[in-house]
Length: 82
Image (cartoon, rainbow, N blue to C red; front, side, top):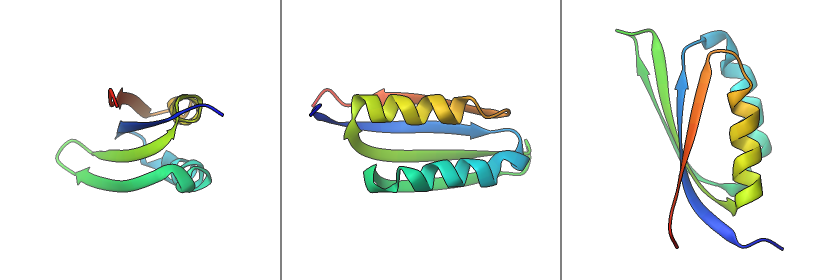
């Protein structure tokens, strides 16, 4: 079994039509999610979401890939050195 890693995901939502798909995918990975914070930014018509995770690296990568494949969603991961 791969070692668990701590990561922060930064998600930019530019297409609000994708929010339900994004939430469905996040729900599938809920066992790995430590916390989540969402900030709507109406001035620019976007939302910013941060996700703290504790999961194997391949799980984090898979989540980033699935979210990144949604139109209007950008995601980046920053990993802890621990």
